[in-house]
Amino acid sequence: MSRLRRSRLKRWLPGLLLVTPSIVLIAVFVYGMLGWNFRLAMTDQHDEISEGSRFVGLENFVALWDQERWGLSVRHAIVFTLVFVGGALALGWLLAFLMEKGIKGEGGFRTVYLFPMAISFVATGVVWRWLMNSGQGEQAVGLNRLFQAVGLGFLENDWFRGETWGMAAMAIPAIWQMSGYVMALFLAGFRGVPEELREAARVDGCREWQVYRYVVFPFLRPVTLSALIILGHISLKVFDLIVSVSGKQIITDVPAVFMWVAVFDAHDPAKGATIAAYIVLAVAVFVVPYLIWNARREKRS
Image (tube, rainbow, N blue to C red; front, side, top):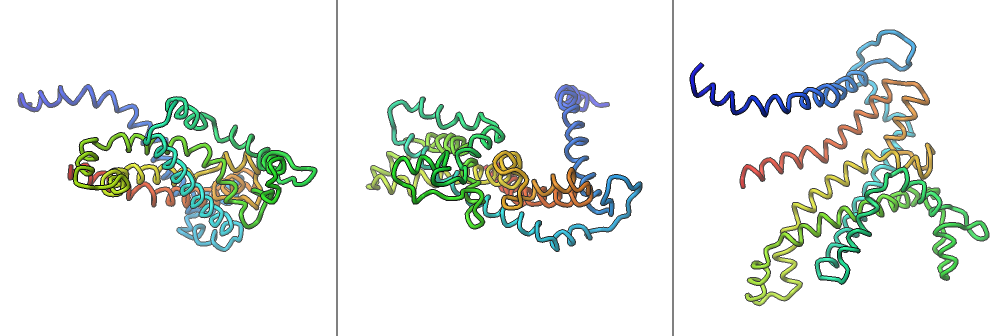
């Protein structure tokens, strides 16, 4: 072995040995389990008792769309994703903008807005289940009682039990929990804009809103994309919040809850694996383009 190769080996070997255990664990328990799940989804193992299974290709993936509950859960997931992602981005951006303009006690406000993120979706769901209680009139509690007390009784509604806006209401607890995190991302983006660029724009005659439009907001595009990816993949996998608020009800069914029912209630491993495979593919639609874009961006820079 040449001296150059020995030198390279000495330089790379310690680091390689250090990361090898994590590489092996990820390969087995992440990518290995994903492969096993896709394999199971392509078999006819529709119970936990029969031994052996037959390869059926994409038959389960096609058959799933014939079930009304699957179509309903997909529609619910789309509504939840649109309201949750849009609401968290808008509220997080607004909070960060107010912080960026300068307010007294900014540190305290940051803590208050970020604190909900430290709470689990289960705890959030338990609290919001009471807040969004559908009882009205004399039986009203939570937000409906609050609306009565401040003279806004016309805002009382069924919340997550409503057929039309039920899933939109279900996104409110998620927005409440994640908007602080989005605020922190946008605030870091605002603070990352060089002050020299702002001053140069003002010297060139730009008004304050033009400074934001042509200088500050373009700097926020990577932050916006990152927040969109993070929120998008959370919304597609949401399970604990839904179950904590409404349980396993059809009216708030989403793919993750439907998968739980298929595997642990209906005891159909192939069907559950098929639903899980669809969830993974949906998350990949969000994540993979971002990874490619990020890799190209780093290569250009």
